Image (cartoon, rainbow, N blue to C red; front, side, top):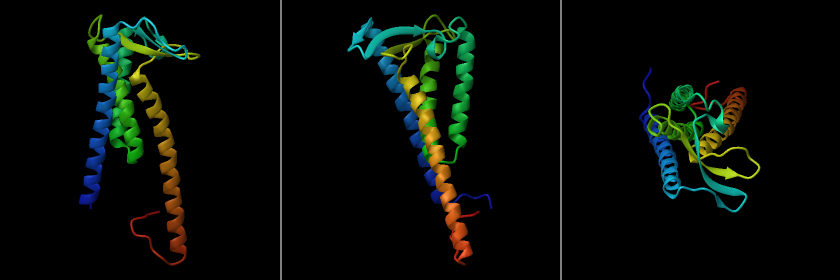
Length: 185
């Protein structure tokens, strides 16, 4: 009744560790890349398609609300909390790991807002990647957030498709008088 089989609990624990690792890798990659850009004072370097240049963004993505850094920081903290909550509660491993990348990206940008100049909760996010034809600059955290969300949506569709196929197979087996252990309709 309420007890989780040992295999299932071990699997969930392993998934949680993978989620923590994914989030940490994103945060570390984001912060290291930002530190390197800050150390080199990148004005503009690249091949025309991709240019590396230092931009301090006090607003949200694309500079939205740049005159209100405290509001952007609070919104970022709420979005980070929501992403962490969703990642922990979701049942599908693929979706959870994708959401862990979103959490890592959100934490990377939130740490800039909290710890970078001009001060606590008013800090500017360090953006440094500019792609020709795309407005604004971005960073590793932004990339992890965007790809994590897209991958999570795809993983949700794939998981739902798999669940529906399993239910159809269980229903067909039930109609044929067979039983499929572990599949409930």
